[in-house]
Image 1 (cartoon, rainbow, N blue to C red):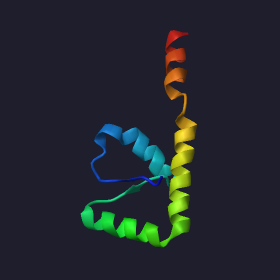
Image 2 (cartoon, rainbow, N blue to C red):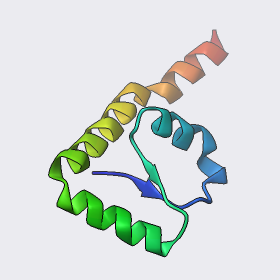
Image 3 (cartoon, rainbow, N blue to C red):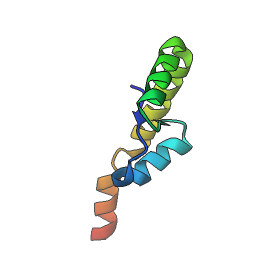
Length: 75
């Protein structure tokens, strides 16, 4: 699933920045840019798949982060 967010992601800055650096998310500024981005992705299956695959890779890399953090705190 491709990820698109608006400009207000202050509660998720670290995750969004990680995804942005991996080309796993698109950040749009308003509803017009959102419509353009969705239309563009729907017209380009390769770009849609690349965005979705990148997002999936970021999620996979982050799996187990809570367990690793708790382990490092308890050690």
